[in-house]
Image (cartoon, rainbow, N blue to C red; front, top):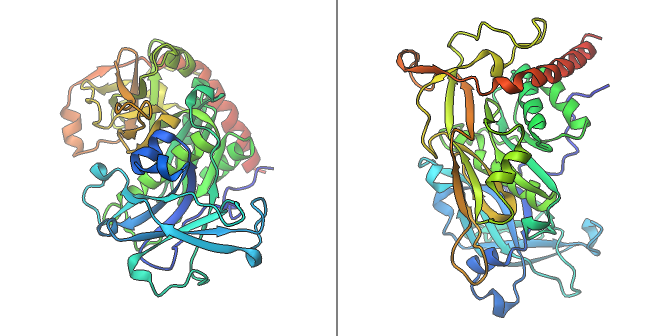
Length: 436
């Protein structure tokens, strides 16, 4: 019997306030990429700085220049965690970098990278946990129980050339009691059909039905669901962008590429589908877009096409009449304008060649070598090859959308018949169990 996804309390990552102050901490990853380290610590060659710890948190934007120090917790053994035998060391932070600042829209809080050197203890052991403190917290002792730490996840990869797993999808937080369980099944099954191996979801609040769908896919090993309970003081789209979207995306980037070893990372919302026109799946598409003979492009931008839900359904059914209706089948009338790149666009990126994600663009890629100053580039994918199908209500006044020119776009229909069978099978399986 599939359990509801509410039983996630065993997840190690969750939002914590390091000292009960005005910022939060979620996760931490080691970064072994030499180009990235030298970019932040130019003297790293002389200092023998071989790795950084990248903490993902939320901070007040105005505090980014405050002196910050990193605290490291060491256990008696690197492979065990015994709080009674732990020691705490500290060092100055390398930097506090506001994430996706150009997309933050002037809000007072933002996701941030708190960058720390990876230090060793006197017995050459490595830290198991980390946190950070800012300059106005000198009164806190390192042993203060109010100081919250997060576990450090140790990366093992520095190059995408050796990654065996193909692609993971990052989905920003599910919030406001998200209830579209059928759309969720269609989303997961479409991307699985395209070749995606794994999904990471950040769960703030969902309905019982959505929770049941998530729990099924989690138990099957296809998805990770992380709790995403940001305190209510950080107001949605007033103080903090979109429920901490940039923290979620970048946590997913480092979790999926450095820890779980996926080569490509896709960023999409639940109403967005990257639909290939020339290819049957993403493996074939990426083989052409990212050939081994030319790896200078690490980011692949897909331009947005709006398919408004208010428009009439496609009257012709391809799938069986008793199958659930699919967005890709019923909505084939779109706004004739295709948005330019970075205007509602989404992307697939090589994770280990990427440093920082925004919502509609990759903010920063790594340098191609420790010698050259050039960074990995991006490719804007032509709509004739693939596009981002965006199924949503009008983003402005509905009358404006009704007056926009439209055209039929049947490019997704070639995927509908196998997709319909997959969605119907999962839908019947889950709702048969729910009726028990």
